[in-house]
Amino acid sequence: MEKFVPFEKLSKKRQKELNKTKRNTWGMINPVTRREKNPKAYDRNKLRSGKFETEFIFFFR
Image (cartoon, rainbow, N blue to C red; front, side, top):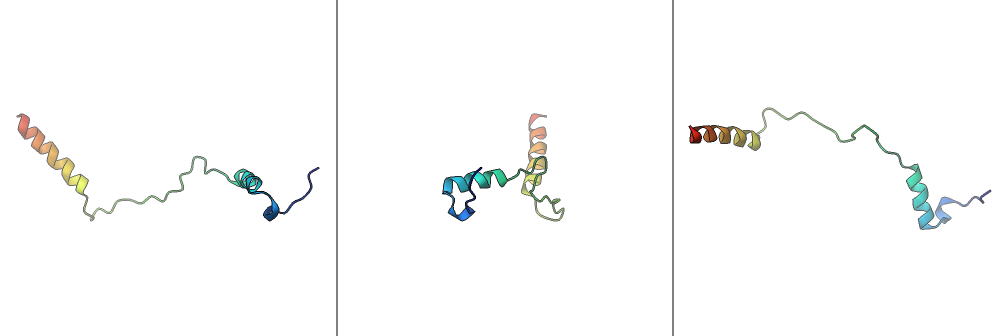
């Protein structure tokens, strides 16, 4: 049986090991908050994608 030693008095290496065992993973859950895009906001990528497609079609006709 191991002798009880307070956490503060343990070596840094042993403290790290204990902290690692206490940590858990999120599993299948992603903790990042997600929001829908604002339809009124300016979207540069949306404009570029539409413009390129029309120029591409006219160039090869």
